[in-house]
Image (cartoon, rainbow, N blue to C red; front, side, top):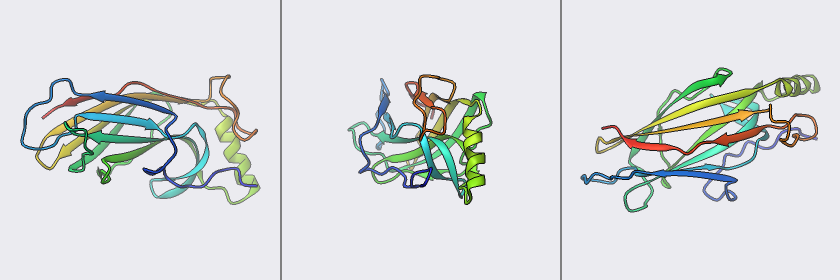
Length: 195
């Protein structure tokens, strides 16, 4: 019996999100092209054990996948932007993050993973037991995410959002009867034009 689920990333055809937050610019400047004016942040799943690619290494994690969707003034997906990410650790453990800018999909989307990482996917019962022990140690990560989008027309938009993943909430359901429960919460994002 496998302890973890497959490493399929959420796609546009994924099930409905478990939670959604959104923000829209109040005063949209008139400019020459589409700019990101709305961000929708979807929590795609509940905290669970699964495999995910963490900086190029298939890893066993407990966490959630987020999907960010950026829309322009007419509600169409923004595809003309490069996205950079920084994550500030507000409380808890060190944050592993992508350092390379990414491009949005044709649907105006990008993804993020918030998790407790036990390391490479276990290949023995002993490694799996160590991973379970890691997941059962007290864990909290409270973060402030900053996404910077630069459009091909030179407009720069910044999105900030705070989020927390913890296993310190005793009311969270256990994971596969071996790992204490994790709870994820995210605040309302803020979107602003910075240039």
